[in-house]
Length: 90
Image (cartoon, rainbow, N blue to C red):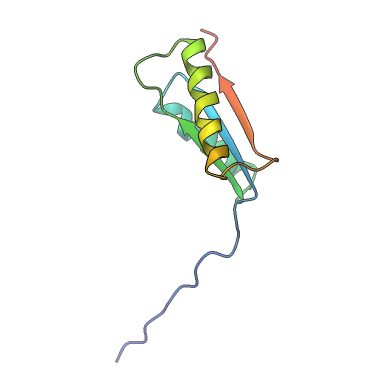
């Protein structure tokens, strides 16, 4: 009978979150996740907000503020967490 191998659940907890509001929805999550991997930060959680219909700076910042408020209300926001708004300069 083959031996069954069971993997233990991950033991590292998320230490810090970065909430990022940006214009794009395809390359930005890959870009920020690659930075996290290259810097070897496994306990950092990066949350990229995908834009809905509006991608102007004001709409992105308003959505970022609203998402952060909801996370605070749900007690998912810690004092060490950050919120960033990232815009393409082109």
